[in-house]
Length: 179
Image (cartoon, rainbow, N blue to C red; front, side, top):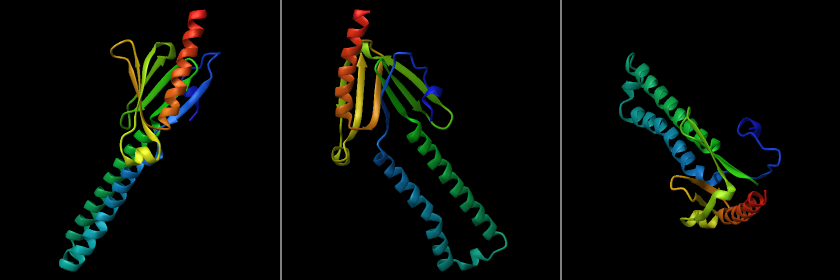
């Protein structure tokens, strides 16, 4: 994905971080997908052992095949939607601002930005065994206004990014007060 399609960079702007969700956070969705893909096989073997006449009937076999096809297509669509949501959520931190790009389903995306000099508080939340072991978590960036907050969901090394954001915000404040 080219950055020029998402944001228009200012001449003095330099990208510091290009962040996505930690890959480990997609494992539960992949696990559910794998389990759901095995369900029709289990049902097939149960029907084959308990009611074998259903698999040879002129009407029942096409109906079961149709239901299995609809089930698989639904699972693929669900998985694809979850993957798109996971992959297209990203956060771009420059030396001037934060750009928050969040995908909501297949056909909805929101893009918001926040100037670094407006940052009032940066909070990290690491919850759970895996998040602690693999160093990922949520990062909350708040400004002085009540409704302006950006949440970086499940990013890698949130403490490092927090420290960098604090330093970048301080540098940006100096730049804006000097100019």
